[in-house]
Structures are given as C-alpha cells and as structure tokens.
Length: 127
Image (cartoon, rainbow, N blue to C red; front, side, top):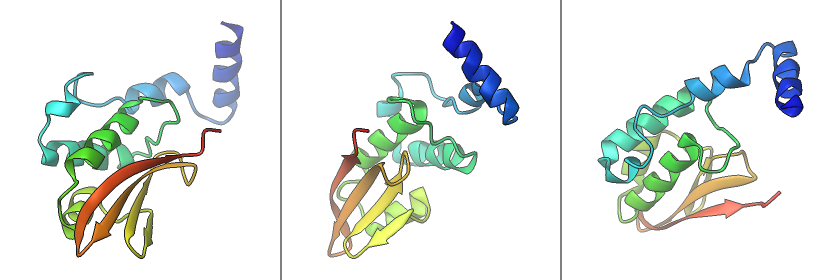
C-alpha cells in the first residue's frame, strides 16, 4: 500500500496519475474477446492505443494483448497490408518490420519474404 502511495506521489510530481493512465489505456473491448475480433477492429484498437501513447510496460496489458493478436492474424498477409493496418513500423529492417511494445527491449516483429509476412514473433529482453 505504501508503495502505491509513493508511486502515485512520484507520478503526481511529474503531472501524471497512474490510475488515470491505466483507465485511459484500457481497451474498448472486454478482456477475453480480442481473439475473436476481425483484423480491422484489432488494427483500429491498436492505432487508438498507440496514438495516445499506451505502450504500457505491464505484461498482458491491453496494448500488449492487441499486439499479440495482430501478430498472429497478420501472418500470411502482405507487407503493405501490415503497414496499412498498423501504420509505419518503429523500425524497418531489410526483411523485418518492428513495432515496439516496450521500446527496443520488447517488440513484435514481422519477417517478410516476397512481400508477404512469413512469420511473426516477439523479442523480449527479459529485464
């Protein structure tokens, strides 16, 4: 409890309230329903969370789960479709598109061959 108080106090000094941030970064979709969403709905929710900088560091946060589902559903799709749905990647390498979850420490990547996503996966630094 004291830790939470210290956390709120330290964020208040920075002009941030962690409880407001968590509420603002909650998905509009109920927990457990994301896997059944259409690709376009997932991509729209990803764009919404990304636009308000909801790159939460918490494992299984809504932002993290949206990225997990997108990574799975975009396999076999064209590179152009990935970019159209998700926006420009944080990093573009020769045959990979990288979208950050927690910066360069943890991110989802798409491996591209002949213009198509042949594999998606995660890099975790485990820090």
